[in-house]
Image (cartoon, rainbow, N blue to C red; front, side, top):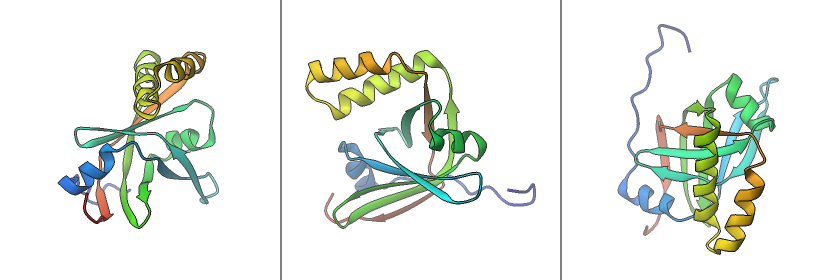
Length: 145
């Protein structure tokens, strides 16, 4: 983006999209590799206010891509219903907050506490990073959500 290009105002998440995102579905995050080619990864996420929060282990390619170029396409699909959010992420490298985020995400996706606790213990051994996506563009095709 150059200094002369206007920054798009944040895009609102509709009530239908909010309901759709509240279910623990999987998302696909698309980033750009250094050669310009796309890379997609499946992630857990949570909707916090008007932001999407997701997390990764440091050292994977897609977080490395986001550290270099913060633009992202974030897609959640369920059969023919889908939602795409585009924007730039904010990166939170605080280790304590990132561990808290992955613990919350683990509990969101694993309802069995013993299973969640075991997975959280494994994540505690990793250096984690958190991404916050505030939508610039929202595209949705949703039926009755």
